[in-house]
Image (cartoon, rainbow, N blue to C red; front, side, top):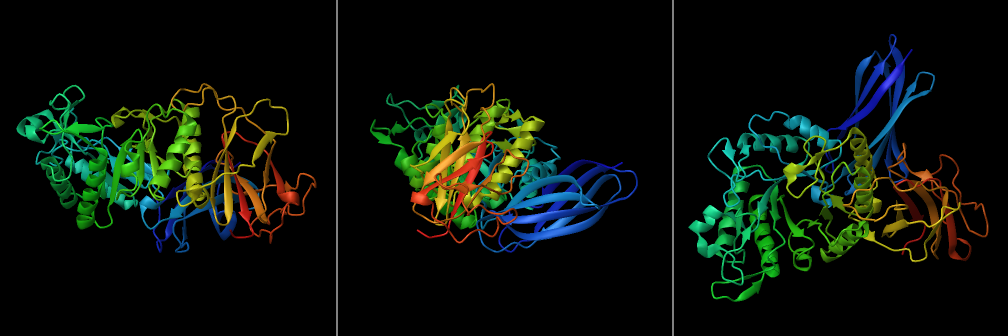
Amino acid sequence: MSRIIRLDTQLSQAFYRPGETVRLTVHIESQVDGPVPARLSAALTHRADVIAQVQKDITLSGGQTSIELTWDPPLASPRGYGVDLRLESEAGDLLAATATAFDVLDRWTQAPRYGFLTDFSPGRSDAAETMEALTRYHVNSLQFYDWMYRHEQFLTGQEPYRDPLGRELSRATVDALIAAAHERGIAAMPYTAIYGASVAFYREHPDWALRGPDGKPIFFGDDFLVIMDPRPGSAWAHHLLDQFGQILRRTAFDGIHLDQYGEPKAGYDAAGVQFPLDAALATFIEETRACVDSLRPEGAVVFNAVNNWPIESVAPAAQDLVYIEVWPPHTGFGDLHRLIVEGQARGGGKPVVLAAYIDPAFEHNVRLADAVIFASGGGHIELGERHRMLADAYFPRCGTMSPSLAEVMRRYYDFAVRYQELIGPATRAGSLESIDFRSLEDFGSLNVWPIVREDEDFTAISLINLTGIEPAEWGRRLESPPKVLGPARLQFTTDRKVSRIWLASPDADDPSAQPLEQWCPTSRPHPLTPSPGALGEGAKGVRGRDGQWAVEIPLLEYWDLVVIEWADSL
């Protein structure tokens, strides 16, 4: 009697650069009576096409069996791939199946999957295990949050040292985590605050502080920090840039992450003259860029536009991505989509990462928020440490994912990586004004939201199911999932020739592309319907009758992706 307990995967890297070999280890846990012959097969996919297949004959002998598979993918970048794995008996019976994904990028900032670390305590010894766990989610960059000695002095000769809140930290731990991240191809970004300094430092340099309308310094927190003047040429700006230089010379960090607090938005000089801060913050980003470029040419610069301010000034500045910390009034799921689309437009096409803090106990919220964010071409800083998820703006107050949510997150991150060329930051926001989504059965009032990304040769429609979700707010706990729908009809009108239409979903056991029956509403079925196994071949292109098309969606839980591939070019 044989039984497969678990089929799991582990990639060697969070992403791969052009020319690097992909190494995938497949772990098989089994209970068997004696040696059992089996076959492991892997299909490498790009979009909806199988581009390579590998098979290995193995013998299961109980316990864990590990098999390494390798590929040398094409040099094109950015590009995402899926890997569909099947374990079969000698007779061809399916014993287990799973899937994963990987991508090829020139730099992590092409498709940022930002995570976080908060534990830098002396003696921490799980750096390698932490990075291995994060690699399972393809996290390719980490914000080292509150790793420093002081906000105005990041490094110290003390070992260990205490941060301003009394936490005991270790430079040796910081360095070990950076090294472990680099082993997996994960970038390490140091948290810094653009204008925060300790009260003690302010007292030594009272003329460096930003002032309020009353001429007094501006405090952040309960006398925790004092806001300094970040204007170009100020003494504080010179000091902080010198500190950045020390970070990049004395550590292996991969750039600078700049934070702000959202307030104040204006300050006053010693003469009582008011000046706005938006332009000053954008200029400081440029100066930080010059510092990073001179000391870490491949390094990155990231700035936190708190509550989307001042996005008009900082999005086009010389940072590598647009990072937005989301607060009210941006409370709806629709706000997440809008912030990403507008941020990418203002940033000239830069990727957008949202910091939207959701307690991992709110599992339906997490799932829907990530569906909206990923479908909109954005990233979400949420995963870090081991099985931890951001739940608060103070990162150490993170929560622990349940095993079920952790598995869902693996599927969702796999999906975002696999289909990034269809929904990722390299695509553009689109619209389908003529789209009509309605149930074929009587479900009553539906709330299915289409999010469209497109390029010259495809239109990708993510169907986000908000049916039964009230209110549709990402931060307020949803007690139940959206109402499952299906089968349902998706209709659209176009003058373009259709090559093929297919569907994929991270909610399905099989995330690979599935052909959809397609027809003209007045003539069903249509001869364009692909035959089984022919999805990779496509059709030369057919026009719908009067430009009308319809496809049937078998099932919609949280998120389905419908892809229309065009046979003609715009």
